[in-house]
Length: 54
Image (spheres, rainbow, N blue to C red):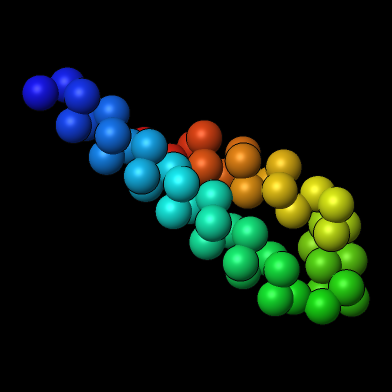
């Protein structure tokens, strides 16, 4: 049942991606600037966060 493990991992990655986008999008521009993130970088950061999910 290797396929179920793969599907579960993809779901966890999808959730991490969406959660990261939602959390960063709620921050105002000044707060994002404080952590050196621009709005255009949010999706790339979310992709990196999702890849790191095991």
